[in-house]
Length: 70
Image (tube, rainbow, N blue to C red; front, side, top):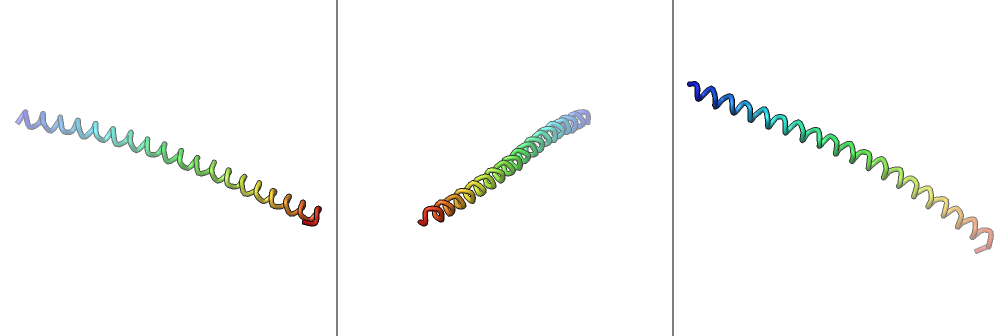
């Protein structure tokens, strides 16, 4: 009977350790998700910058073509 109680206690300890590991993994997943979202925000800003630069370039080319009657 005492051995059974000791075994149950050991299993409970292992379950507690596994739960702690799961919590650490969940925190790591949350951190990675935050990094992914930040990367997406940065990439969206970069896309906006490139689109605006492309638009300005097109406008400049149209102005040059108009000025030089091309």
